[in-house]
Length: 361
Image (cartoon, rainbow, N blue to C red):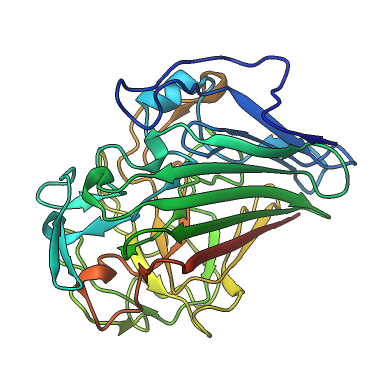
């Protein structure tokens, strides 16, 4: 069944539009659910930030657990972190909140010291998306969100039509497909999904014993402001070497109260625009595993270094290192590094970011 802008029965209607914004007159509609026929694999999403709210998957005993951090209401997402959200127009950092494109300097809104992060103070995770299609039954249920980013939004040039589709398929695959078309001016584009994963279950403690393998033999070193310095260096001999399955906390710096951990971009091995394996994570206790495939040049590993007593779904409290993010992406600050793979989309061109999260147990 195809339902356009249909809602779950327990919809929370929340008017979050800012006067005079592109969201004026629209509402964040609450949560939508997708479930497989067997009933042992489901997700919930919301059109606030085109956000992934929950992912229920079985463990080796068949017990279902939600493995994504998040919140119980749309209002909490509006106030909280970008957990599970679609990040854009440009995810990660842009140095000095500026870039030059086709001879013109563009100045962005700063929200990370002198830099811009995750699209600015009001990136795509802070806007209301339109539900274009919602197919909640059949072999491959899916939902598609749409957002039109306006010329000058957060300082970025040109109009951008953006679509994000969440889809389930057998046996336990979650696909996220992101397409964006520049309609008037050239612009940088780097869309990511910012899900926080804990395969033992959200709120179950830290992920330091999760075993992580990265299909990435190089990474992009950063300066003290987390801006890439332009090099692409080998991971061999560094704490970033996850070429073989390794506990997340085995070599990382632990800094109680905030910081430490990992927050770094890896250069994914293989052809940059081809679907290929990016990472594999497994929780040794539950047996749950996640294998990520994508078609982007990089992936940001983040270990929730700054989470601290964050109240999440079902009364759970999320603490430091309580999840990890694997955000496939363009290289951070690519717009200011011509030596990096380009993140520029020109009028009429279509940006495509495809990822598949393959769960097993």
